[in-house]
Length: 170
Image 1 (cartoon, rainbow, N blue to C red):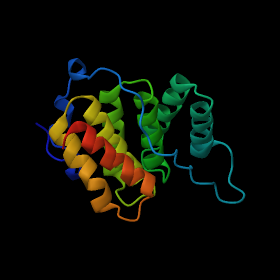
Image 2 (tube, rainbow, N blue to C red):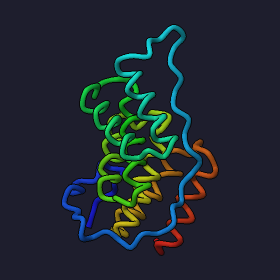
Image 3 (cartoon, rainbow, N blue to C red):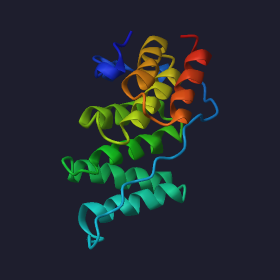
């Protein structure tokens, strides 16, 4: 029903909560490391919100991390960390099995900067979210794009995409 999410998933917003699949154990690649601030950077402003939100995620305060990252992407949409913030926002949803919101966040971050260091993770998690929503065609298309678009991405990330494609019967 969806075009490839790797091609910006036209019609993605039509997914509804009622389409969510039963919760499955989380399969995810190793957590990407957030970029480090430049020497002498202030802990306030955009970086301060980002860092506090990331620390909330690390402490498994997913609601706090969600609030912080949502605040970040709405307040600083053009900040260099916005792509990462969208990814982590998606993870707050994904880890709480809210796959529709997760997919929307992963797609937003992916579309913002397809060349960012976190883009392969965003695309993978978009595909995982779509699979959990039962959107097989979109999930398969998205997951198959991971190794094609990012052949130099970590092997574990590419393997997770491959393993999920097998489970979804792509």
